[in-house]
Image 1 (cartoon, rainbow, N blue to C red):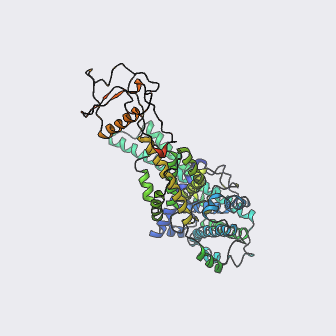
Image 2: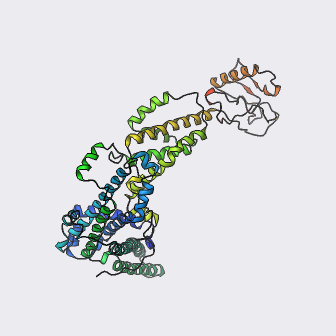
Image 3: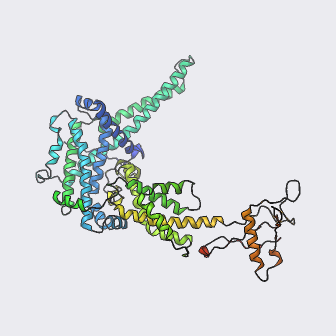
Length: 522
């Protein structure tokens, strides 16, 4: 008999935004505990209750719910009309819609395989042997679709029951942690009282004890409402129905896109190397993010950012970079906004793909991401927040991606070179208001000589020679006296020698030029 679970308004509820992320973590730790010590397996075999397995089962329930939602009619339409035609998919994966549908179908089957393996493991923990070796039952689903037909309405009702139980399980996890904190505070206070040889009385102890009792009651109530107190066999039975329905949905949605095993083998030989197959999807996502960060603020960069980016480049990109930089046209002049605009043509579609790749890795496309978005639990929404592999760099052609990375690196090289050139130009920065003195004044009121390098001295001499060739130069511009016999120069102007030296390659760039003496009284 199926009991309608109480309604829970939001996915997170009282558990907060971290709830199901911790279920994911705890679920993994429980898997390790089971594999290493046999503790969980033995405990499950002694009773019918889910008990401590509740947190791991809740994680599995969320996986199934996400996969089931991704196969809804609304989300399949979004897949076919939007995702497959997105710029990132078309440029990095393929322009063949049938091929893209085959890839999407293969991904869904792989997700179902992961989900069903967890159900098989829970089934093997049941006392009732009929739930053992469920993998044999699942392997026959392809050949026995008619007898195992599941109605969508029944599957959605079953999933909503499990989702509500998973929500209470998430709350239980947080309240368990709160109980642990309260009990620690109470024990610590008791130790303080005993150390001072005081009686176990007082308002603070009474309040702490009251909090502990209240929290214990809350935990007991949540155990009754959550997966903790449910029969493991009952939960596994519902999960088997969900696996059967999802398998059926994949067959119906992608019936023309699921190739035979023989065709699969032929296709696999023709496939180019992808970032996911090479285990490089996340690494390339990080490269794109670094390039976007540098392009957005090329003037204020951490000292090691450019080095880190270069060291992370693939070897073939580094090799091609050297030859491409040497062939750059030195006469071509572009401003910083123009270079950024060229980079943005690629970054505007590539950065979202890289971001989705990072998100999918952090939450594995499951619990973490859904908990962060705060979606209503079990609510059917078009455009689910679950990220599918085609939205990431997983299926991206490595050769195509390397070309885009190389182009972006070249643009970054030009951008940084322009910034460095601009930074070399001395800027007019007044140190104090104008005075009638002929140079900087020291603390004792005497004229102070300014020491400059040999390179600066040579530059000043060139500037003065250039000025001497300009007809009609005014006396106000002759403000620097160079003493060739000594190693010092007396400065009679604050802008001493600050006129920028013009370079033909960047004649049109914004150099923040300062005209000597313009608008300044001496």
